[in-house]
View 1: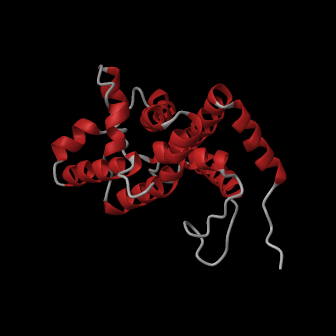
View 2: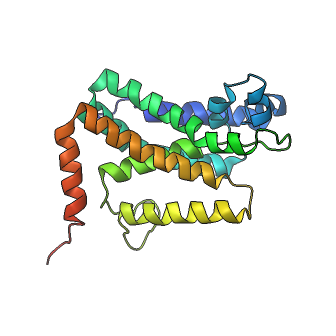
Length: 220
């Protein structure tokens, strides 16, 4: 990136500032929450604003770390491979915020009449970013992100994540929006594949070949 300020870093900084402000401003937080009942009353902006606030510092830290690590690669792919610098950044921005909204849609349908339900966080968007990365680099080792002592292929991690999100959503054992994680992940996969199909079909073939070739094993 040559030291340039990436769009991913701008998103991380912006979200961190807004989340920090909302930590000490309950009124601001209430106006930005994902709340299906309020959306039913016409406050559609909540599909997007909810991705700019978080429950606490840990919630914010995890989402912003994931966004920065994976988003930098996905942004580079959009700008350098699929669309070019200007259009690539625009598409990347649309991708991220549309993922936040679309990932929340199943919860909106499920809780439209539930006055007690609300949610927040960028997890739907970050899940989409992670799975866009998996489509682009299916066999990349994720040592530096999740596992300090051994490497696991991104594709395997993704399959496990989808299973876990689906399982936890069905169990309903906590207040985490696992269905948003799952929906965001699926959206990330399809968005990336469709963009490659439409704008750079030759690279889509490269992606398919990389997937079918499997992981590259080091030889000594």
